[in-house]
Image 1 (cartoon, rainbow, N blue to C red):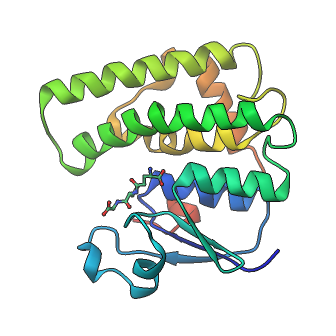
Image 2: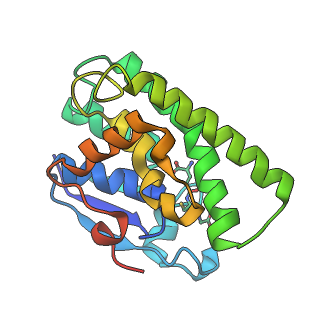
Length: 204
Ligand SMILES: N[C@@H](CCC(=O)N[C@@H](CS)C(=O)NCC(=O)O)C(=O)O
């Protein structure tokens, strides 16, 4: 396997999902911070060259740039035959599409409204909150019967779905009513290589 470079930012939960996969897999890599709050054409040039959709994260693996956090996670799982790929690639892929369409939409956008924009349309916030609660209910149901989303061991599905939940305080989200989700997050916190986004990618 060749050199790995991750482009991200400490406030980006999508970047954190990939950073966490790299640390949990204990893969040596270079981390490059992108000035994500600056206009796109003012951000670092090496990132602009490789970010096909103008977003972070981007992972360079052996010279090839891969974008979209869940595509990157699936790439790491497939090429390292790890993080659930070795258990069931189809089930793992299902979870990644679920994340991208569900909790990967509801929670980041709620955080955008409540934490970064400090306001926003009340109807939109209510819709995002309702959707997030349904997403947490779904995770709760699965995790009530097993320690991780794919079964007994941590997988890329867990790393994708948990990412933004470590910013729960920024959206005033009290996870107490989702006890299985809370216990799952504690299990993830206990993994070798785990760190809070601001510890792994630089404090803000
Ligand atoms: N679907 C994308 C979402 C990535 C995304 O929303 N990235 C944000 C940071 S978390 C970004 O780059 N925002 C800056 C911009 O769009 O200019 C993924 O999963 O990678």
